[in-house]
Image (cartoon, rainbow, N blue to C red; front, side, top):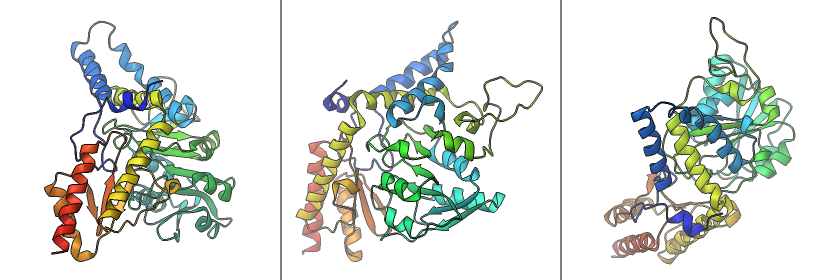
Length: 372
C-alpha cells in the first residue's frame, strides 16, 4: 500500500485550483499511461496491440476494487450521462428523483418516459434540497419501482445517506449517480443496484471515462434498450445474436482502450492508498475552506457536518456582494464555479497550503472591499 503522501506526490496542478467538482486535473500516472498506450498504437509493433484488447478487463477489475462490485457486473461507459441513459431507458414503473438533480439524471428519466412510455418520473419534494431517507419514505407507494439519487449533490455538496435510503426503499432498485464523490467518498456502493460515474472529476482520469455497475437483480430487471454488437461474448457475423444477461448487455460498440487504460491507472492509484485515506484528507481540506469563510464572515450554505459532506463547500454572499467575491477570487488566481448566486469551492487531497493562502488573500480582498 502507498501512503497519502505518495498519492499526493503524483499530482502537480497549479496552486489556486479549487474546482475539482468541475474537472480534476490528471496526475502523472494517468499521463504516463496514456503516453505508453499511444506509443504502442503509434508503432504498432508485431503483437504489441494485444495489450489494448486487455484494457477492458483491466478497467473493470479496477472499478471492482473501488466499488466492491464484481468485475463481471461492470461495463465501461464513456461518461455518467450514457450510463444513466442506459439505466433509465431500462426501467418500467415509477422512479422517484429530485428535479434538482444534475440534468444527466433528470433528462435521462424524462427522455425515457417520452420515448417508451413505461417509466414515470415522480418528482421528489426534498428536505431543503437534500434527498434524505425521510423525504423518500413519505412518497413511496406501490407504483414506485426505483429511486435515483446523487451520492453527492452538485449544487449543495450534500452527501446522501445511501445506506439509509436502501433501508427505507426495501427491494426497489436504487440508482446512484456517484460522480461527485467517486474516488474520494468511501461509500457503501453495494447497497445500490446501479452505480454510474464518470472519471473526469474526483477520480482524475480525464474525459471519456466512466462505468456502470449493476447488481445481479438490476441485471435481471433492466431492459438493455441500447445494446449493440459488443453486448455478447461472441463476434457476431451474419446474424444478430440475442441479448445476453448482465452488465455487458449495456455495451454498444468498442470503447477507446486508451481511455480505459487512463481510467484503470487512475483507479489503481486510488486503490493503492485507499479511498478512505483520500477521503479523510478531502474532508479535512473542506473543513479548512469552511473555517476561512467563517473567518471573513462569508455565509456557508453547504453542510458543516462531516458525515454530510465530501469535498464541496458552497458560499452564498449577499446578492450585491457576489460580484465582489468572484472578482476577488479571479484576481488572486483561485479557480471555482459560480452559479445561481453561489460560489462552489472544491478541494482534493492534493490541495496545497499555497492554495489556501491564495484563498485567504482573496477573502481578505473581498472583506476589505465590502467594508469600505
